[in-house]
Image (cartoon, rainbow, N blue to C red; front, side, top):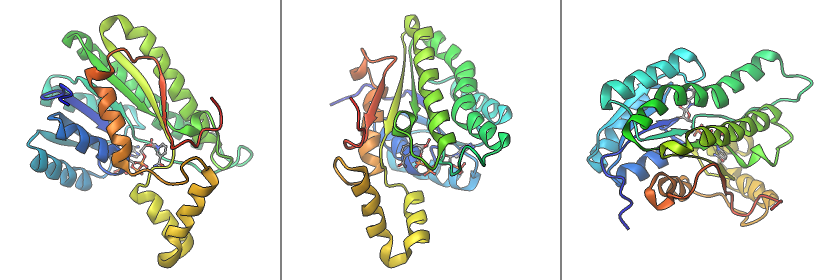
Length: 261
Ligand code: NDP
């Protein structure tokens, strides 16, 4: 199936490893040119060169911290300089937290607010006008199942991801008349290198797989992690015109972990 994405341009925050990199690979395979964003410039440059070589597309890397206004400005400037704007914005950069509400200070709340919410606000302000000028666009927000089904050990993550979902809905309403579709995807358990690293720290070289299986068993549903590629297929579809009637929604890709309808 030709998804009609060839020669489009996408910015992917957190596009240098894990889910974001799998989405980058999926879009590159469809002929999309990319701007990959991460703080670690060395990794970004390496992955950009690899994806470009593998798929014959143009890929640039921007070393920037999207939790800051300056970092977002750098991303916007690079997208305009390199491609004159973008067709697709994927707000994916993010990370888990670990705290109780009683212990966490204001600075921690502020950091996650800036990373999970303000990055999306700032990048929309900078890149959506260019989409309007092109007459089309797609914005995807990678939140989490935790936006609606909180994990007890990360209240800041749960809260800021829920806010991102509401931002997505609100932006969708604002640009629905401009042929720009805005949606949220809420993944469940996705087996990224970070999950494996943490599991090895907790359970060691011999026990990490059993540890992760325990996490999946507790979640229920399919009782397994998805690969980043499994999730990336859904992102790629949502970027394409095959999803042309979908906007202002949240889609769960969680193997049945969500306990509500
Ligand atoms: P990884 O930790 O594997 O990758 C995170 C990516 O974001 C990296 O490219 C990282 O690069 C980048 N990043 C992190 N902080 C910043 C920052 N301040 N500025 C710019 N880039 C940043 O994460 P995952 O692939 O697991 O997760 C991606 C998204 O998916 C996150 O938003 C996460 O909350 C969400 N998610 C993940 C799930 C999972 O099971 N893995 C489940 C549900 C949601 P660098 O470190 O170089 O900055």
